[in-house]
Length: 332
Ligand SMILES: [Zn+2]
Image (cartoon, rainbow, N blue to C red; front, side, top):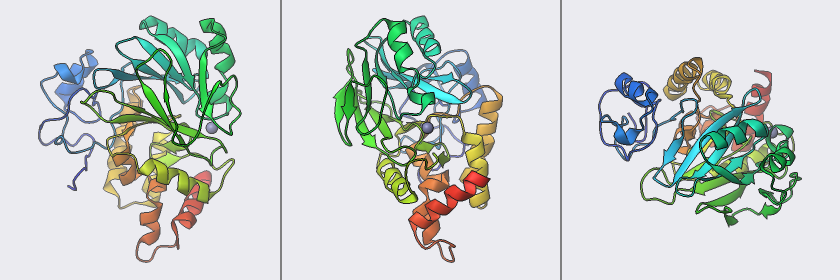
């Protein structure tokens, strides 16, 4: 097995992991039972499969489970609408949260209230209604006309009052957490992805919220950009550390991996991810988060350079591969 490789469900040994990741994708039956009873990995005697230097392909989450990154940052995926994910980015000490793309605000606010978190910011990845469409209502629900609403420059985000440029950093309101903007245009002209740095020394370094630019095993449609734009946007995300947790805007994983298996039938990582994703979804669990290191191994849109560079490839360049794959996926 190559360094960094991890096959979900293929358990051969137990070695030390850096702790605290809920690893439903990664652990033994016994461990999964422990997780289902509500424990997190810190209290579990069994550890994630793989050494501390390895990055799992994906982690997944039980419905209602917070993903803990160190002792100060947690992320709660909140399923909304038919297949969207909103997220609460939680400062665990202050019990404040930023809501990412809360397009069904009642659901997101109810979840925050039930857990005792106060929503102090909204982060919006792009202008589509199923991401930005709840901004007006969440201000009303929270009774805060001056609620911090963050978006990217060049994108028309309802009620935004903080605009971030590529590379900008911003400390979230009433929180010790900071976000960094990565402009990722193509799905929309001003689409922005955000990383939230893990302020503690344990756990993965950051969480990425990539809206409809990068999905687990796939990427967003090119509504307002070209294949060249998507190549450039995904190249920025590829530079993030392999252990970066990837929280995307939709649960499209099974459909994406079926397409990935069609493109790279010989890629074992794709097949094991697909089997794992089917099990997760059948249980009512989520496939988010994945990892950046995992995406590089099974996501064909993240692998265009490699696919175009192969001997006998039908594509002459990364851009050509990107354009062709997107067309194929649209018809798949
Ligand atoms: Zn969209």
